[in-house]
Length: 466
Image 1 (cartoon, one colour):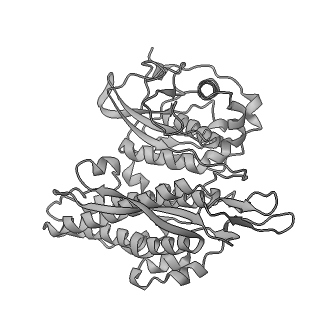
Image 2: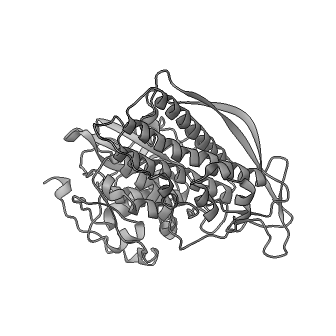
Image 3: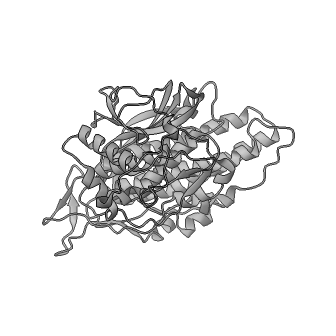
């Protein structure tokens, strides 16, 4: 009997019942399609729902990384029934998976729960997808989590631990090819819900501005349906970066802020230049219209979102360029960031992005959340009219404040940009605890037409560490 067909007896898990919140989300059906988009959604679902395992994560934390990984694996394998998804692929939040654990979950949901726990504990890890030698070797058909021993850099060179809830041991399945997607730890500084994602923007709110019909009689290298799908992916891609920027600011994780803003600018401006070059090569009307659609979306993320984002950051931080990083759209660019289809050119476009050092400005007592206000949505139709000052005036949701709740003293920063308080104090936040993550609207809109491929699991084993 294959492991896929194995039905096992699981623990009742009464000691965990009070640690999970009542689930607010139903199962989200993904349909058919490719596994890369499935991975993107696993990542987004983990970012959205990791607060659901806050109490569970504390219970599973042990004295060492290895023991903690074994503890998480043991919890997954022994408390959730395994069941491969059918034709409809499903993503379950941890709370939902727990409530229906006897019904069974598959590798994607196991990976979401493991990633949520690791995010809460602050451990770097990867979502890994693999091609399996004995099952559809031409396709990526299985996904699980690996945790690098080197938590400082996240490098896998020193080995890693495997957390695959579909298997009875922590040994890794056999594979013929892997692709890894990095999940960095989210900084904790004593804030309640410090890792809870925010809800300030959704591409679904602005995408109608870019939905002019594309007619493709006679075929196309880049069809209208492809353009629609890629537009959704671009929106999701930048939403994820913007969410990380909000999280970084709220947690005062200046390294995460530097890395994420660099990626936002580097990928955005490389892609803009790449599509300009691509369009100049001469294509039929359909392909040209599809490229124009991509340019319109990227123009929104440049002329409106980037403009507003830079103004928002500059109001509360000093931004000093300290180095540069080269981005290019050469061979492999779509593998690194496959959100951006049809961008490859030869010779490659090269964009040199600034790396900024961020320091919180003196006298800042509160920072509002960066979000897509109604003004931003209006400007999607007229990016050239966007006014940063008007945008900043419309931000009202408090992201983080530095007021002392006892005596009103305010926090300041020293010459190194570190927070210093007049008395013992910690920042406090205002969060939308019940708010849905930016993925919610995106997942539900248009996914039926994308769909995602069926992912199956196998019981093949190799060593725990590589």
